[in-house]
Length: 83
Image 1 (spheres, one colour):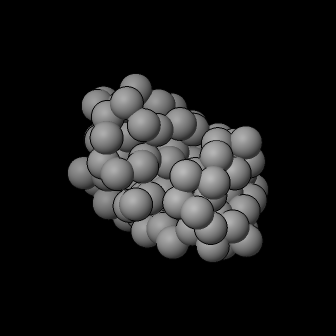
Image 2 (cartoon, rainbow, N blue to C red; image 1 turned 60 degrees about the vertical axis):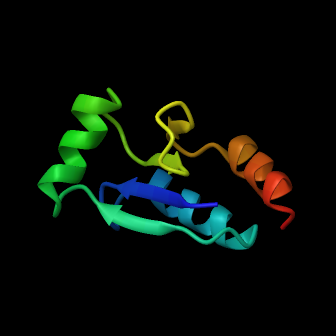
């Protein structure tokens, strides 16, 4: 499973909570700071339609993503991954 978290940087409390919860569940993920990567910002806003961070994308599937701190969805990923 591939998980990418598009973040608004270290001052984003929902981003930090998402990182911690993913880590606590043993889910490996890639962080992308949308402030530093223009193409990532365009992907999150233009393609996925989000205006808030974090945005979590699973397996690069356009239908498998969400925004905000969602411990329920992270827990579901953990169960699916067998973590």
